[in-house]
Amino acid sequence: MKNTLVGLLTRLILIMVFLASCATDDGSLDTDIYLEIPDASLEAILIHKGIDTDGVLNKQMLKADANTIEALDLATLEYGAITDLSGIEGFVSLKKLVANQHNIEQIDLSFNELLDSVYLAGNNISSINVSNNTNLKLLDVSANKLVSIKGLTDLKKIKILNLSFNYLEAISLNNPLLEILHISNNDLTSLNITEAVSLKNLLLTTNKLNNLNIDSNINLETLLVSDNQLKSINLIENSSLTHLYITSNLLTNLDVSSNSNLIDLKVDRNPNLSCIKIDSNQDIPMVSLAAHQELNVFCN
Image (cartoon, rainbow, N blue to C red):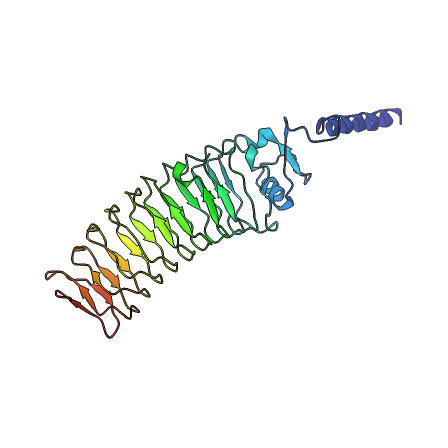
């Protein structure tokens, strides 16, 4: 009986020591040792993946558990939708973050300087600052509520950027390695991509653009710019172009005679465009025209 009582007292003392170690003297979390994880869904995923090693939903985890993780995939709703990614700042070795299809409204990635791939599609983020994430090669923040994004000009290594299905009105890019840019279904009235000289794939459908300068984008292969307000576009410098979708605009003229590699052309639903100029030796395998339109070597 005496031994049992001593054993119980010993366990009680150990528990009290452990609980005391979790907090400072004023009862707050010891941030030198622990990360605060206020979102229960996030912590549940971290526990399930064996990252939060105490295995208890207690709104905290050891910093030591987080600071060596290089890839974190949170793309599951099994434990409910994440609304708060607080605590992500402790994952200082993180290179890849996947957190698509949650209810995240704000995110701070300023401490995650090693990130090279970020997937945050399908959340409720209205603004994001990536100025500290200069190692990013891929950023997908499509299908959010973005009205602003800061730090894009600092992403000199970025190759793939997806900003589609947001509320952006103006974008200026000077990212020399950028190859794929998707900004469909926004409110764009202004786009400057003159410094994005490596661009190969450009998706701009369903915006409000009335002007588009792609003279310096000589590597461009795919241009999808349907459902805008373009009256004209200069394609003379874009000899690598293979796919051009420019339906539902306000075009009055279009010259593709310099685009000898063009294999797919869609120009219907341009009511003021009747003649599309081509070269005499040019053959475009796939063409979508309206009844009043024609391809011709001679256009007035």
